[in-house]
Length: 313
Image (cartoon, rainbow, N blue to C red; front, side, top):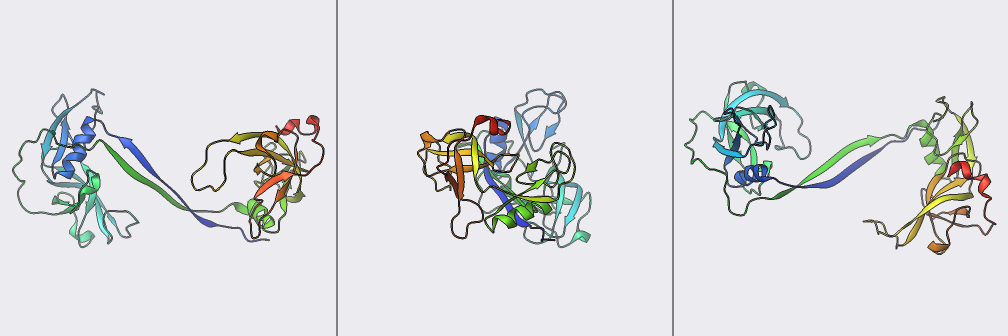
């Protein structure tokens, strides 16, 4: 039995968002080493601040300064920090109710070990050396035995307020295509296209999934299809994709390979884009060392009759 493949995958993109007046004041305050909360109609002070009361849904904008010191309400020890977390060595995740606040703020606590952390311990903010108006302007919390400092009563008015943030989003995981698709990928390395036949309806699906999507039964019989096929439908791409070295316009099509009962997609080349049509007969073009067809080109055969592929459109 062939080895089931697996590979690391990283999905990463910058998430850009604008800020309303409350979040703008909060993040700008962090840049200036000021912590702001928002006061609700019933007198509670919420930190971090929100723009709507979570109880009444009332619009709230009354900003109030709270202290950079507070009390740990609960915590958990992080033995192995991951990439991008606040501290490189082991630390505690803590919920801290800052002095003057009625809700707790989540952040890291720099402590020598879990035995040094306990609910009720007093802590203070350790500010980052360089601040830009982000939650990372708080480098972490640290143990603190002193009194809460005197506050200036800042109301949230700043010169050059932060109006937007860019938050990088990243997901690291290991992907395994499973038995059926591992065989499919391994066959592509030999310039073959292999699907699987359903033992019930006898349809051949490509790429195979290990089960028939119609009957729901397991599939195991391998069937080589193609290499030629028929364009069932297509679109003309006019917008150049980032990091994709293909000049626009070009054509992307659904192609029903001979012997398959499901169309797959591929790029059409070797013909002007405005001459691509439904029923066009095509064949794969492989590049040296390529793991899959680079594109499909016309075979020169007469177009397929619509009745032969209408179920795959």
